[in-house]
Length: 46
Image (tube, rainbow, N blue to C red; front, side, top):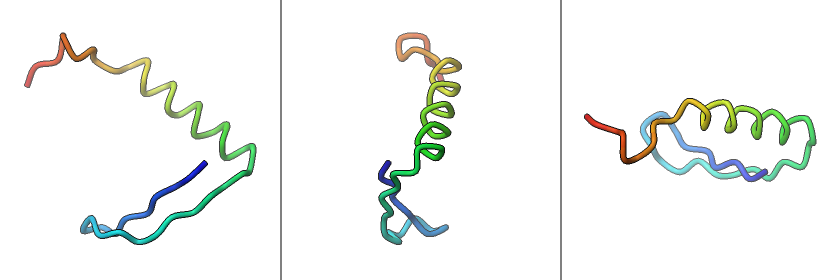
């Protein structure tokens, strides 16, 4: 997993490569949970 870090004002703060399987599994699970709740582009309105 490659994490990109930014400051609170959006400036680049570096990156970190992480091979820890528990971290990778947690990020994948979080992505899938959010993806399930996503609104398809064709249905999105502002």
